[in-house]
Amino acid sequence: MTDLEGIDLARVLHPNTNFAALHRDGPLVLVRGEGVHVWDNRGRQYIEAMAGLWCTTLGYGDEELARVAYEQIKQLSFSHLFTGKSHEPAVLLADKLVQMAPFAASRVFFGNSGSDANDTQIKLVWYYNNAIGRPAKKKIIARHKAYHGTTLASAGLTGLPAFHKLFDVPLPGILHTDAPYFYRGAEAGEREEDYASRLAASLEKLILREGPDTVAAFIAEPLMGVGGVLLPPRTYFEKVQAVLTKYDVLLIDDEVITGFGRTGELWGAQAFGMHPNTLTAAKALSSAYLPISAVLVPEFMYAPMVEASGQVGLFGHGFTYSGHPVSAAVALRALQIYEERNLYAHVRNIAPQFQARLHALASHPLVGDTRGIGLLGGCELVQNKTTKAAFDAKRAVGAKCMQLCQERGLVVRAIGDVIALCPPFIVTPDQIDQIFTLLAQGLDDTFAWARKEQLV
Ligand SMILES: Cc1ncc(COP(=O)(O)O)c(C=O)c1O
Figure 1 (cartoon, rainbow, N blue to C red):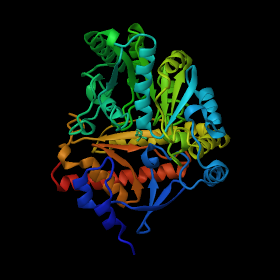
Figure 2 (tube, rainbow, N blue to C red; figure 1 turned 135 degrees about the vertical axis):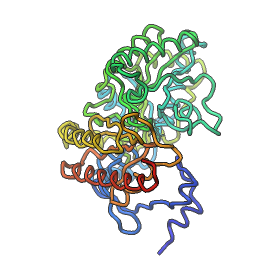
Figure 3 (spheres, rainbow, N blue to C red; figure 1 turned 45 degrees about the vertical axis):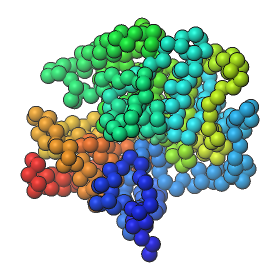
Figure 4 (cartoon, protein in one colour; figure 1 turned 90 degrees about the vertical axis):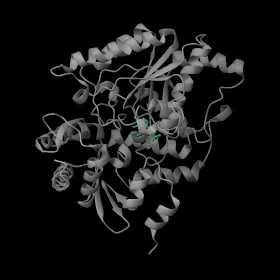
């Protein structure tokens, strides 16, 4: 048998990985997936409760998507969108996305990942403000705990220290305001609405300190996924948007996790009363069968760029694989499948069961908070439920819980000490029960371990 683990450890430079832990524990090598299940190279089966990286919404091995990819490869395996060239899959997908947009979008720019799409967002905002004669209005405000990717600019938008340290990011002109983290950020007795007012006031203070004429855009995920499954407090976006409107600051909506039904609404923006100017989509856009991302742009931004690109001689931005025909064909089919198989309704129908089982974990001695919406959830492990005292991060309690769940055949993700769940949309009620039964057992295993280690 090939020693895949050994070769992996010798040859692969893993993204977003603690190398020391990888060399200690070894990789988990997956070889097959079907529906909501994956199998490793030792024949062990897992229920995939994270949809990969919040992305394989249609589960694994969908025949129709496989066929569409095969047929598109036979028909036109590559073409591009540079210098006026075009092709059917990109045209039809752009048209579909504009029709689905939660705001008056008119154009779609295609990329390959959420990260490069968010870089594109920054470049479009800069290009647009230069084109309309506002060269000083360039700063972008993101939030602490945000995750917007890891390319040179998007890593700066990301508000998590591990993505900045030793990399010399953020780039100048990228700022951060407060994370909407009610469980830890709210003052004793503070209501969600008051917490939201306080965050909006803090954002306004930052804009005034920097000078409104220098602030171009605010970027936000409707809810924070990688930051620890953080839902905005009630009235948050309403109050934040009033500030943005006051100072003529654009709102970029990062729907990379929330887009296409994850929250029970088509867009996260609709779930949380957000009214964006532009939007980033990826992941569920193709159910992660092939890499593709999209930036949805309003006409008021596109129109001035037409004249500007004429003056420059070119809109000098794009990727070889922008709108790749095979990715675009698969994405278009994925969006049709969500509708044909009634998956938006399915998510809405089973979300109450998912959320009820999630919130029932709150009584577990390790769980300080549970939070979620739709088919997305997180539970935060704490050392002391009353004081909310966190575990020493060095003890990696969340990572231990993830490993113990894995040993029981459940794939979840540990974000620090938050255990995240984000199953494929095709999950059945029985499978939801199975996920939470295994997770409860994994939590018990973690508690037993923590006692032995004298952590609780
Ligand atoms: C909200 C959000 N934006 C952007 C990204 C980056 O996407 P990618 O990993 O495709 O570059 C992610 C990835 O998880 C994300 O969750």
